[in-house]
Image 1 (cartoon, rainbow, N blue to C red):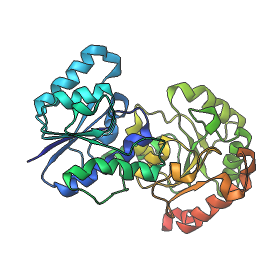
Image 2 (tube, rainbow, N blue to C red; image 1 turned 90 degrees about the vertical axis):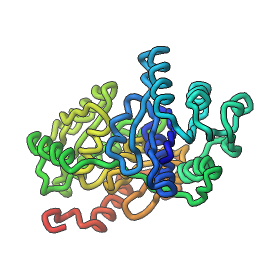
Image 3 (cartoon, rainbow, N blue to C red; image 1 turned 180 degrees about the horizontal axis):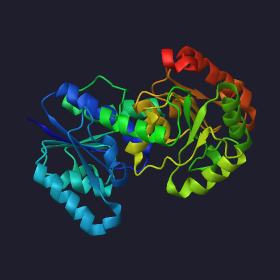
Image 4 (spheres, one colour; image 1 turned 180 degrees about the vertical axis):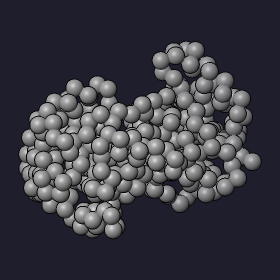
Length: 339
């Protein structure tokens, strides 16, 4: 049995989720192998129970040098045959080199190439989501894996989804009605859709469909979320108190919803990962190819190109609502009890 470690040590939720596409490809090539995944400590739980990941390893940034050695100790103990380092920075290069693996594959860097048995060129420049997945599959070519898999999933247990369904009902959410989690904020201010537009979308969804809106947020976004909630007059159809401990619990909430709407961000990938239909509003400086890797009837986005515009203000709420209507009609969310 081959033991394989994939290193995707990055803080971005989206990048880490789509990195699992490599794990899927490795499992397909080596179905009897052990595939482990190294990620940031705040994302560890998200990949538990994954169909193509046997163990999730983490490097705790808060633990300092002690955490670094603890992770290295675990890596050496597992005696990997292959290490695929998607990050290829000094820390991960050291992990790869000291792992003891006979095959160590990383991106080509002039000063790091000696840590690997194979360094792969072609990673310079900013890549879009599709190219990112394609490019990272180049790391698998030394293993004779040439087929590119772009799909990624988050694997939740039925009891987890049921537990959160019960929590949502206890909070007052009617599961027979339309449920829409909304990403109303963004880590980067230039990726935040105008607040007055987002408020109009939320209010229209409530008025038009009696939709139930879930506002989710990280701890440092809570103040903004509550201000947004207040501007909706603390509407009884808006739910703001479904707090989660980690991204996996957010995925459980999404698994019980109907449509994700909001700003581009890693949480959109969480929605796609659990199979939730989604419509994200892409920032003017970003193309849809940079953000959406598997565009289809479920995975949709709105860009300024769609409206022949130049900035966020050109993407009017009416257009976004029109796109939302189209998805709702397509998936028959108007009559949930009979879908």
